[in-house]
Image (tube, rainbow, N blue to C red; front, side, top):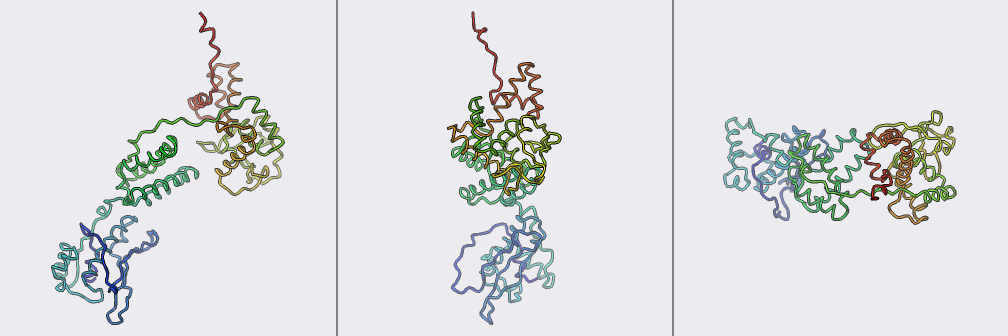
Length: 449
């Protein structure tokens, strides 16, 4: 390898701004880095063209690989290739030609000062002379030296998404992706010079979360905090960052939006209205009301999940794998014959019971929520406090109060927990408090003198 190439493939302790004025007809093109679109299985390199003095045309020179491809991360390769590119550009500006076999003697100290590779070029000169024009024992930077700034933020976030892909549901991964992209977009706008993980600070995270709470709500801000905390905690556990700043950022107090329960009169009016206007939406609602499913769980149901022989329903619950529930008689009587339908078809589609519907489950849930708003909420002039969830709350409240008539509160909750599918007594009790299902008995006699 020539002294020219060795001078390029040495990383320097300090670099200066590369902005410069080129002549109208420069002898070389500005060196560029080829990254194979991020593919680490391919070779990355620096490439450039140099003007041939015989033809007066720019000709592509040999690619400069150095030891960049010995590194196994995008950040490390990019760091060392950036160093090569800077060194190459400085040598070209100083007037050195890759077409000539320049000896060490031709490199003078004033030029070396201009190129800013003083000490390491001097080392190469000595080794070059002592080894009879063969360079030996060139000291390249260690891999740890390329990690001063850490991994590029986008690569780091992509890495977390890959790790989480088989650990959480696809819907959760999508939520991580969207919130991660929102943060990176905000960061590029407000802190354009921040590109690497080790450049992140608690102040930046706080600025982002504060903007979220100002523009939306404490609840949305807390959701972003939770997602970013997942990203940073995963990076910390994999030794990509030193500390997860989110741990030291407090959760804001927020009041959750809960759908209210329906009065008996309103509930009856809705069912009567939908019997004529929208039987598909009515059956969808009855799965929520009678089987205590969440709207997203109803949207996941397929024909094969409804076992009319054993009167059971198999579904994917909120925080667990598949669950099984009995189908109560009042819902069983409402379900049409499904025996001739494709087992893999969805139970609910916009136009029929049992059919294909090529869209994500969240889109299916949102579709029926909008349909409920158009067909029910607008017709009965219901405000934002009422939604599909209101039917689940309404019927759990009904059931609990009926059971409570002949049982102690603990017995009633124990029986109710088997029906609703809550994973713990404490979770059920919190849910009952949130929907105001538990009411105290009349205490008038306690106030009398």
